[in-house]
Length: 499
Image (cartoon, rainbow, N blue to C red; front, top):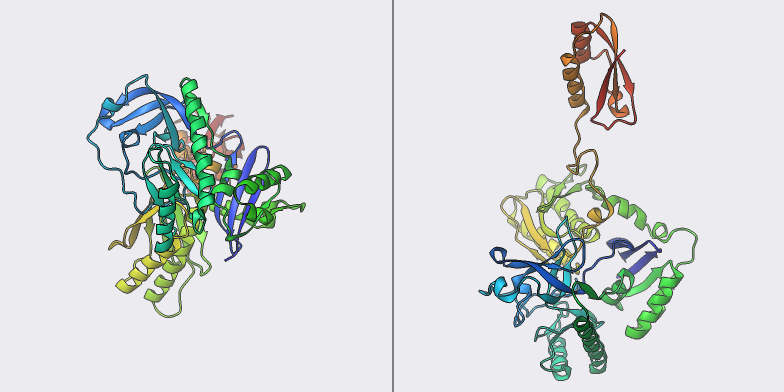
């Protein structure tokens, strides 16, 4: 498998793409003015406690107060789902247990607490925070507030899992938090884990001392920027190269890798060609496609992706593909091809929350099972935590994907000023009938008087005085209509002027 990381970095923006066999499968964008705050640690002040919602609002010094659930504030909670880097999945850490403790027993207004951001501000909502701090290193994740030892689920060999746990139990300082071995820790020795452990525990001590000296609200620790975060969390020996088009970023990456993974330094390459790096690797067209709702499949079928506030709906259609044998075979092949592309699009667009997949219905139960297994195999490539339910009798598959940041579409676009974000605007016929109704309201015309109707140029191309709708107006009111295009008018706007 040929995998590469391609980095386009400027003073204003960093864009990073992961290529798998030359195909873009993941893409991240971070702008200098709008850096993510996920992973940052703050000393905050509780502004409001809501017993009815078992939560609280905390002032971090940001535009909006952050949101804290009761399960993320109980200090003696040892069994929880860690807000660790996206690719880390824990097999032996269950979901938070339902506690009977009230948030009002744990927090009070005005109280100062140390918290970490687990989710960015999304759709106008404040950031999600937790008091369970996680500090990722190269091979370990340190959890200073939780007494737990775990191993990433992606490390599947049972003997290796046992070996790693034994090393952790042997080297970790008891009573000083817990550790989880990251995927990159597979096959590593005790000395490498010790170096990571010392670095992380010292980092926590620095953060703790900083918190003691500062007053809320205040940021006391910033996570790495997108470039170094990707090198820390994503780069592994399976990548053959890291391409970067900035000399400064190239030097930063080499210096960073020299400290954490010296054996991978030789894979970092400076892109020196005149052509933009994202054009050279064919990434720019993929970004343009990722902002469109329709995605064509090679067979001629297509999928449609629609994001809403509540969920993401993905619909599969046969399109131009008519198959060769029978309907069931045509539908099955379209669904299998679509399953692979859907997972790629989910990763590429960084879709999260509830996702509903509407595959084309199949009669054969065996085909439904094969489709589900194909989807499961593809989703294993995703670093983010996902959960998939079996195909329903209506051919739907429901899944959830951990949402930490805005999706690619939400990051790169804004609400349409025409449709207000609905994705629809009034049709030309609707606008024509609105013009007709307004004209029919007018009175006191002179016989043969000219009335100018100014409309958007696109609408103008479909309107004319010879239209039966407007012939009736001219005949009834005794006037003459003159249509004129006006680029300054919104698609749905029009203006009437008597001459």
